[in-house]
Length: 237
Image (cartoon, rainbow, N blue to C red; front, side, top):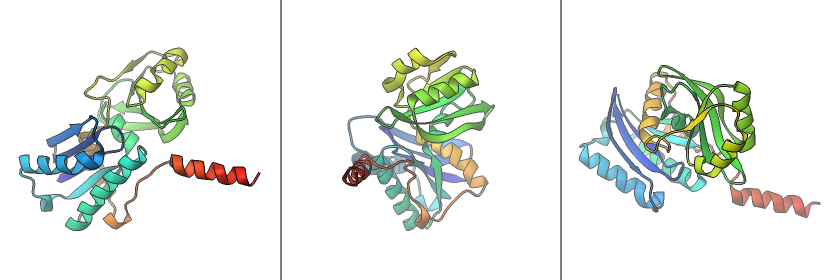
């Protein structure tokens, strides 16, 4: 089984290729470039280095959301375009699940935090039994106070990761009532390798879709759409 994975849901752009149990190659960039500038060049360079024949792929996996609206659109358009051109299926991986899978095997409750602005975070709660990830709370958009309260109610040690950590670390320190830690730099952001590892499980379970059916999962309206709804509501008052 050979899978290509793409994640451009947050600040990081990442592509990876997994064959059976091996991560053949991964290219991850977290720098001051837009995903439209980096994603395709990264993919082309990776394919060249590992001598990848795209026709040999079994499927294309993509972090399908939530996350940055622009980033999700770029990643989804790239994955969808490739899958349509190659006549390959798409595997949609929830972004927060893939982020949590960076810490596969961790003993603590895993809490990804993606900055969703307005004091909200895209988050979820996960626990590992060996390499098996169990979902305690499915990915969602919550106020940071709410997810901290849920962790406190569980009463177990927690580990945080994601681009929301530097945004909310002070709030965590003030509110949390259990032992906690933060993931190290090589594991604390999105990685296409984790998307690919989860996609392998999805593929075995038959969780693939036709490329034409793929669309991002935003979980909430964009800022422009929210502002439009607020204006409409204000005009009707």
